[in-house]
Image (cartoon, rainbow over all chains, first blue to last red; front, side, top):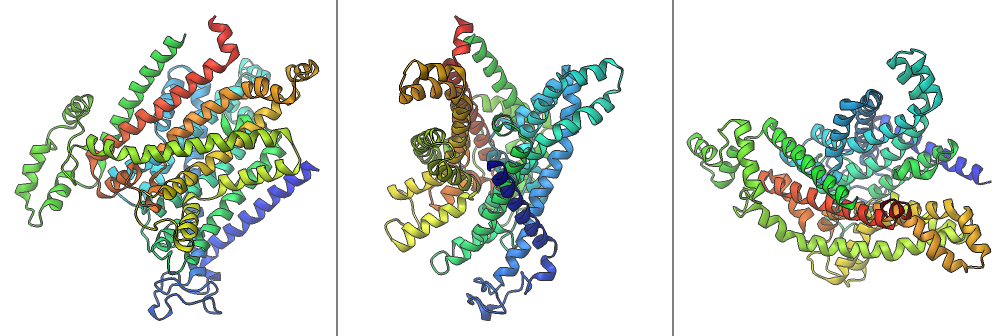
Length: 276
Length: 312
């Protein structure tokens, strides 16, 4: 019974994710209007066949902006996660396998990244390096890097103490093969859960930064940036703040549902994955 | 053992601070903006090369990077981060003077977390699978998924715009402080109550709990003396880490409820690229964060019976 429920939650998450990804990919095709086009005649226009969700204070189509916003919100989060995955997994696994100084330097790097809460690091790096999308992606990657690096290390260590890895090493299997063929497939389920929960987190974080005006300019139809604009319109048109908020909430929910569903499916204990 | 742990922690803190100082220096030097030029252009409209060169000399930007780094470290050890490029006042003073607003928000949020997360976690674990558990689990899930700025704007809309019992702009009203704390606490309540539930359920069927029940100890006492005690170390470690995140994560809340706290101050410094203030902010935050984590870890260790036995 519970198993089925967990499964349906994961499926619901996956359906929502698929929907969001499609919205992001085909935003240009399905949007009714140009998201950047300012129509001063249509300021605050109510919902109509031309503007399915109405128009904002510049007369831009809200629905089109939300659809294009999926591109930014999902795209940036995916970029950050891909960067983290592509660096933490090989470096973390290799350093753990090698041990000694390699491992210590790796841990020191993780410690620096974890010495400060992500918000502080991103604020500081953006302040020092300047505003911009590339810097936002870099600083977000850096601020979360250590945490994921440590998780990769702890998973690798658990596997390395198991018999099959010890036998493989004693049998003369090359390190690359031990890491890639034996350890990696066994830590993938845990990492999949970790990173899918991480995407939800990253989306929240990135949209929070754009809400503060860091990283992206207000004209860009990112959900957080739209909320930032909506804040000054809160008295006149509170609905402007509602739509992007719902979008972020649903997307984060989708990734969390999917991640938790995967965790139950792989029968991983809650402690090891989320809170270790 | 505790002394050794503390000594290790202090060494760790120093190493991390050294790493961070390298990093902030390295980044400042590869950044495309020349701080002296930025400063001069802000101070006067008719900035020329001569003035920029003069300021470069005054701030020491024309020295070699290792030299600049050393002189910077020498000042920082005496808590002198230089003057803010914007206001001209000492950066450390500015940052510390913004701290009280942020601390008030964070402390209230900490209190809310403690008051709500523990009962929710316990209630959820004592009725697993029942309606209460489902409701609480649903609430926790929503709490960790809802964006803070949405919740903040919603509260502002309800209390500020519709009910008009709180100023929409301007700070100091107790209700806006409370709303800010709620926004800060919300995701942490979800996380902590989930962790507590998982830890309690894990031990609910363990031998020592069954034995305690068999001895006729009331459910209430089993929960208080056995289950909660076992769950405490992990929860306290997480709670301590959360306090660090809370103090750091106030920028959004402060923007929404117009509180002149540290988060907003740092945000402005970042947007204006006020390097001394940013550096002072980083070091202060690193200190707060590591202090909170270490305190929580020490409490966690002291509460852990296995560790007590080892040290005795």
